[in-house]
Image (cartoon, rainbow, N blue to C red; front, side, top):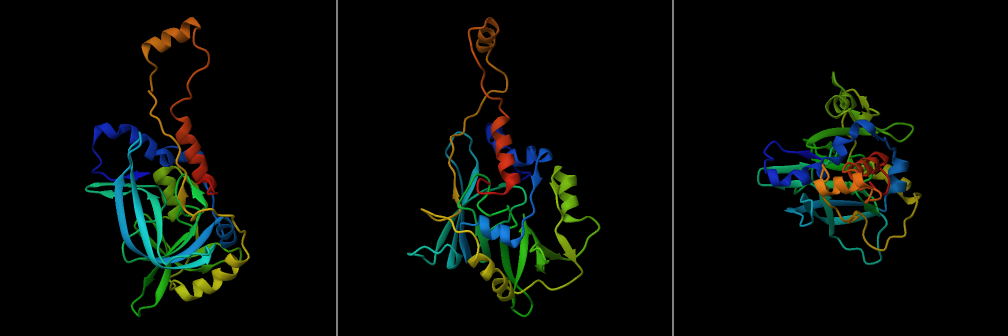
Length: 282
């Protein structure tokens, strides 16, 4: 998780370790590229909606971190519409901003009031509610003529999506000396298959995008949901000392203690693996 430069409080050191789990273990992981068929199959629900509110807050568990409650309105279900479908949808997202402190999971979008999104949501998640981190999220921004056009967003950077290739992978407009995938490798050590780029071309319109994805979503794998998709999996988190207490160390040496506690890095490692798979536990 990316943390703003203004992050200072020393008493949040344990939270820093937990929140940086994805980034810290990135060198040993791979971000799996996903085409439309995969995004659709993994999504418990797919929705279109406009952000009406973003409320960030500190969690109250042992490892304090920032979460955000994102409210979407004028919601249309593209997949997994419940019988009592409402036009408002609430999503709990890891990260956010409180004062000068900002936290964000690597390679994920930033939700802002007024933005219109198409979201492919995991049934449940441990890392981020959107399938494939940023890959299952598409923000529609109006061009100079008022036409809503589709973009990917990683952190605060927009990437115009001009269409999809024959295998269903997104094409991103614009070229650069350093490809987005190469920037991730250089910055975080993440091994990522670069998204195909095209020369300066307009992003596809929201209408054209929906025409392409609707039939794919209609034939995708159904999920037996008991609650709205995009729900966090709450697991008990506990800070572990990096150095065993002196008494425990002596007891271990004398043979009076059998077994040992799991290393402190085990839990973040599992989180990084889940993020790399981009599946239902990500």
